[in-house]
Image (tube, rainbow over all chains, first blue to last red; front, top):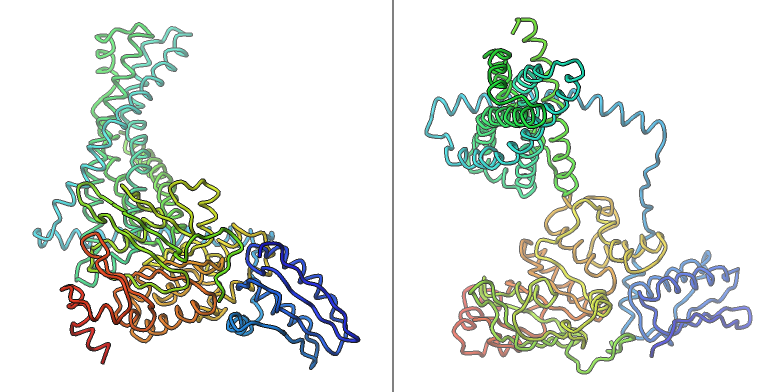
Length: 377
Length: 262
């Protein structure tokens, strides 16, 4: 029973008989394909061709199709090759594959310079669409906020608190740790270079201004975009994939009100809190390094800090936080709702949620810097 | 079809042999000392109340749910003591149709069907394409759906494509988890007919979890009923109708059953 499949050629006068034997199954498909390809060349213009399959002891779709393929290629004009000795068990299978039409060619994607230019063009044009989508979402969120303000009962407090826990409370340890370390590094680098011209103490000015105005909020916003923006996109995206958002809509709920508003609000509350905690952790880390590494004792550090920074620096930093939170939230929600049916699409949109989120955060930071410089803060 | 195999010798005509199987989630015992045999070449319909553990049993046999006790033999190979190579061999010989289709969402229909073939066999792209069209034809779909993505298919088409993928390697055994749920009655009837035809054509053994009385009447050779973690009855449709078990009486003599029998 075991053994390899064979296809023997027996010439009969001016006719041709091909005798198939053994198991013609998927397991032997590579061998069978080669045998059939060789046999296809034998056709010529013989008037009488038949394929004897009486010795085949096992046949499946692969074997049946290859026999059918052989039959088709040996058939020329009106001289049809025949299959002989087919057992009743397999006749329905052979009938089944006989109905198969020629396979459509797989579409191949060709890489060309034109194609690449086309891609670049589409991406640039896509940027405009992204901006419109973001503004559209901003409008929808504001409209939903308006509706909730008119009817406060529809506000989803539980959901907001839940998201606040996720994006704020649970983010405290990691945000604290990273900003602490960044504070340490800034302080160490500052002391190392300032020491050369005896300006050790100015590291406090640099640390205070840098952390409160820029680093604290920017770093925290980037971390939140990576941590919570991606989570929002993935959550909304998988809800979209499973038609949960459509279900909400048909029940008469507005997905913006139910899903997006609580998330946005949680983010807008969370980011200033995290930015404040982050700035404090960075100052603490910087002060610790200044003391242990630079010999600036805590008392001198605090005195210097009080002289170096004013409330303006703190306000400049913290005012940016809610705006950045809104940008991150809107980007994440737009991307989440843009997810289509496939797992791949979910991955793409989650990636672009984080990338676009961070990009817009930095752009916003630049805009704020110009604004504050021009009003003299 | 002659039940000959060019692969492993089989000791009996049972293609699946489940003995004394127990599955537990926390403290809930879902399957409790269950025995089941599926014979070569038959279509076994597997019924039972919702939540009785039909899908759990299927998933236990195919190795997705761990069991606490008992043994499972498929094609005469004990799946617990099988080494990785034997297991792969077994997995190549069965096909599974999941309840929701479980098509790979980022692959087209063509790639979905070709995926198992491409992994297991080293054949040309031409043969892959031809086999894909043949399989689509067997499940009643034309080659024009080949380059669509699963999200662009209707529910019935997803089931058909998933069946084509389950059949891609010409398995000897197919598990169908509620194949007709979510199909319209005509579509479901066609599907039953399709399973029957394929079983005849390819000599399949079919293990079908179903709630569809029509499927049980038209497609199944034998019916097994799950209740309280055990098989409470197994036999032909006539045996089921003659049974005095209260759940069976309710199921096979209820309003819906009478509508099917006519």
